Image (cartoon, rainbow, N blue to C red; front, side, top):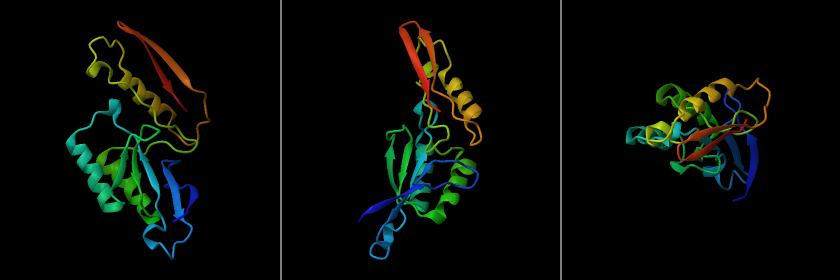
Length: 167
């Protein structure tokens, strides 16, 4: 089937995280008339538990196609294939039941990522996870203007880390 890009399909009160995909022959292929992609922000330092992964997979089996891509080009968890009526439901469950947010798409804050830092690196001297969280909370707002990329250089015993946060 042929796809036409549906632009960024938003959920109420949120500026991105959903890439709209519509089939250009919906009557011939009703199962994929809508096949939106959702980006889900990865947890800090990409720490996963089996319980967390199970929650994500259960949600996606219930409300989407069940097809995922872990850490696509944006670093997000990618949920492939859902319909427009499911978008608000998925967003609600992610944010209220799982405590997770959508990832970036469009002009909002895109997905910041951090290294594992102090959790596993004995030479880490800066809390990268806290920095990532703080920057995300500060700039993740649809009404804040775009700012250029911020780069923070952090010296550690074994060299230098560069953290780039793209807005």
